[in-house]
Length: 137
Image (cartoon, rainbow, N blue to C red; front, side, top):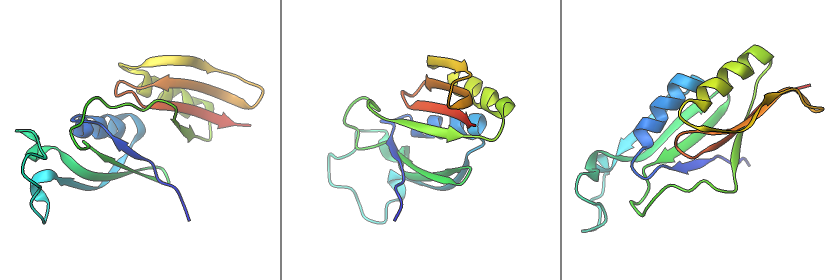
């Protein structure tokens, strides 16, 4: 058994994936648009123009697969109460990833040395996803 995060970006999925590709070296392993669905969507399910939005995607960050979608067009993305944690092997890599994730986002705990890690910081990226970057000691 394993748990995989599935993130809903309400119209910004492709932009988010590109951001993670650049900032975290994510590798896209699958991307299907609503228009590519093998079964037609019920009438009125998709707003006009959403045919090219992402119905389902998966991408790898290191050894982890993250799934994502533009969702069901129901409002703003809300990622409250959860953060994704990225563990790396060295301080320089942690600083690099933290800076990349912070671009256009909000630092909630600056990168620093803690009693449990040589480097640890928390940031909410520009899509509202919370991240913790850590170099465990």
